[in-house]
Image (cartoon, rainbow, N blue to C red):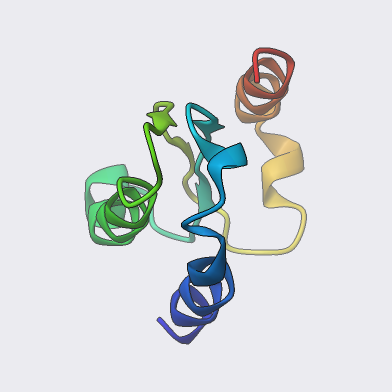
Length: 90
């Protein structure tokens, strides 16, 4: 959770910045976990943060499940394609 706290601390001064109004937010989360339901606490924390922004557009999270080792996501072309499409549509 230290990393999430650092993220929040560094974005907090940006909250009043009107340039974020209506911006699309995409959460891409990876973990060794095999069940995305077990990742919901982390996702909920980020969603709560994004809701503090003015008029956020929050996209459906992308879950990189089963990423135990460096490079595991490279072996999941469906996740790479999902992230690519999200970037194209951003």
